[in-house]
Length: 276
Image (cartoon, rainbow, N blue to C red):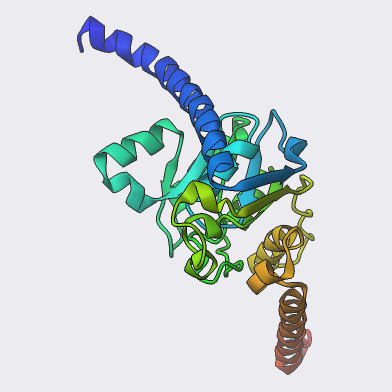
């Protein structure tokens, strides 16, 4: 390895950090201008995202504009988890890597992405993860994967719920656009972003099997409770209660089966030695 290559190995991380921070600042200001141009944009409780320490920011996902919204509510440069398909394109992949993104293969357990997320949180970094993994088809919260629950449990990081409503009307919702101007900057739909209180997952109960579906319901419920009812989707209070009742019933049935198996096992008595 030449001396120039050795020098580059030492300084490349420094240059990457500068590029990451610079691109975050640039995208913050550019994104802010775009949001104000194309929408009537409002944010509640923007100061709730901590400035330091490992934190997972969990927004719902309505449109590509949610990425701009996420950038706006963050007080520092962050690391987004992005679908692996983004990294297959040379220019796009390079840009998202400079922004700090790391890939995740959706639809399956991605151990590498999980470990990367936990590593970053351990370093005190901020992550932005859309738990649904993709944009909602009907603009209400869809079924989320258990990935965020796994990351939050293993890292014990703070979680900040972010509830976004209205971004789908900027470019996706054709029914809303009917009768409106064709020009984006003349439509200006209302966009509301609510940032919830930071929290951690409750500690696991010793000796009990932990249900990741239950933790995911908790995480998504925090987001849904900040949204109007029409956006709550799979995580409306009624649906969460239904799933909770079903889980409790399943636990009782498993406990009854285990008790029955134990009762069916033959009891053994100590062997008595016969002395002749």
